[in-house]
Amino acid sequence: MESKGLEPKVSIIMATFNRAHLIMDALSSIREQTYSNWECLVIDDGGTDGTLQVLKPILETDNRFKYFKRNGGHAKGLPGCRNYGLDIASGCYIVFFDDDDIVHPRNLEVNVEILNSENKAFCRYDKRPFFNENPVISINDIQKDYTVKGICKNELEEIITGEIPFASCTVMWDKKCFEFERFNEQLQYAEEWELYSRIVSAGYEGVSINKILYYNRKHPESNTGEFYNNDKLRLDSKVNASRLIIKNLKLKGLLTENLNKYFIRLSFFLKEYELLNFVLNQSNSGFLIRAKYILGYKFYPILRPVFIFKDKLLKLKNKLIHNL
Image (tube, rainbow, N blue to C red; front, side, top):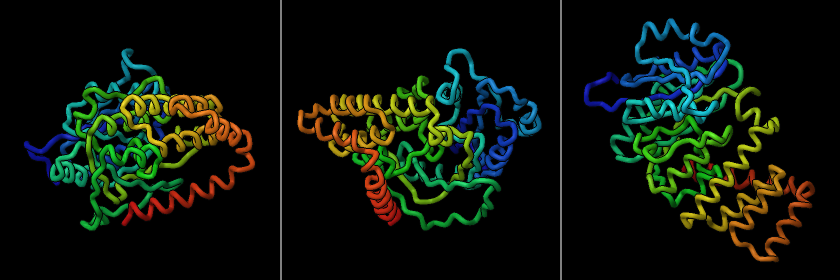
């Protein structure tokens, strides 16, 4: 798709930190987009591996790529970099891509087409992980056979629990979604989970499509990899993000029984007794309910395999429903 004067520009915001060995793969996949009216704002979080030198050839030959250092007005970390990107973005639409991933060549084209035709505030799509070698992607593997489903506050439970996946890099947003909402810069993990739940709870409506338009690289140095390796900074951030989500939901009258149970299970999984108490207090649980879950927390190591099996069954069921 060629760029035309009346087409909306897309602002791609990419935070980076010491990924000089991977970032060119990500930028090359952006350069190959079939939709061409975009800018890519690379926000460096203070890396020391010579990223700028690696980027110079592409910066000098394609002015759609722009390099910035995160300014002092934003905290160090991914949320601060993305907020700075939001400050300077000039596009009608916003999408966040990571510096170690690969983007499908028709990602922007498909998203812009849907947002234009559906007149919605966001469009989410699917991703696929890869490990060592970059995925082989055909530009023609996107057909018009995907389904488009509406998303609003009614689906908030599914978004928060992950039944409808809302990864940081799998949503294109209308810029208006960030007029009053930004990333919480105190969070260093699950910051998009917390922000995206705020946006949807504020009443913005979007669509979901069941097409893979993004490929995320799996490696232990990623934020997600560090979380599952029990990095304390990431674990604490997940707990703090949970607290913020619960507070927001309660304030808006959206803290349902199902969400209470979800956060209770999460407190078990994270081994966070204080989070369990916080959920029970926010839900105004009575003595018997509190006693039930506190006792369950103590016996969780024994019951955990049962919970994991039930959770896998539920996710499989919801995935099948989502792909219908």
